[in-house]
Structure formats: structure tokens, C-alpha cells
Length: 122
Image 1 (cartoon, rainbow, N blue to C red):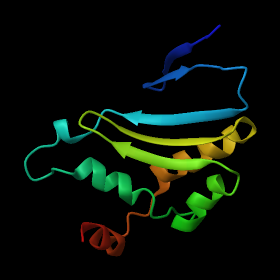
Image 2 (image 1 turned 90 degrees about the vertical axis):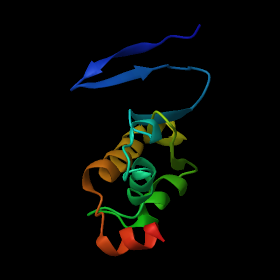
Image 3 (image 1 turned 120 degrees about the horizontal axis):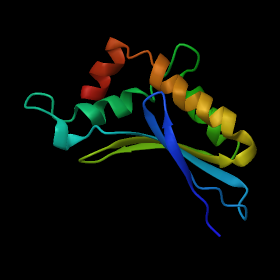
Image 4 (image 1 turned 180 degrees about the vertical axis):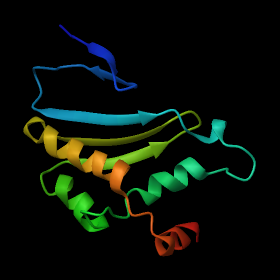
């Protein structure tokens, strides 16, 4: 039987759906930003930021971000649509803490370096 848990914590909405028959987790951080909400002159901003968050943090280089998850058989990725942007990781369930650490490091501590922004604009 599928169970779900949901609620709110610090203004963020969360949902959990435990599946006892699998040994992996998928965790996503969803934000209500996308092309539908972008004003003239800022089109593509959410997608641009999505790419920038993978370019490194104070603690991890771009390579280290992907290796932290992918070297353990996981996947680290993101997508932007008209109404939302999601940053997510899929990995062995025992690595949940690591996946969250990487995702939150990207969100809170990305370098957003000017040189990398110029490269991304190209």
C-alpha cells in the first residue's frame, strides 16, 4: 500500500512517499519559478540560474558536485518548465543525507561567478 506524508516546514512544502520495495530515493527541491512568471527582459532567467547552480559552490567544484552523487551510482540533475524549476537527486536510500547536502549546498552556496555567467550566456 502506498503511503504519503506531507506538510510544511519553514515555508517549504514537502511530500514523502515511502516505497518499502525499493532501496533508492529520489529527492527533489521544487520552486514555483519558470518562463510563465518571467517578465520582459528576464526571459530564461530561471533556466539560466538552474545551469549556474551546477557550476560550483564554496565547498565543491562543478566536478565535485556531480561526482559526490554519481560516483555512488546516483543521478544529480534539474529541469525548468513553464511553471517550476526542480533540482533533484536519485541515489541509494542510505545516501539521503549526502544527496540533501549536495542539493542545499548548490542552492545556498553557489559561487555564481561572473566569468561562468558570461560563459553560460554564450
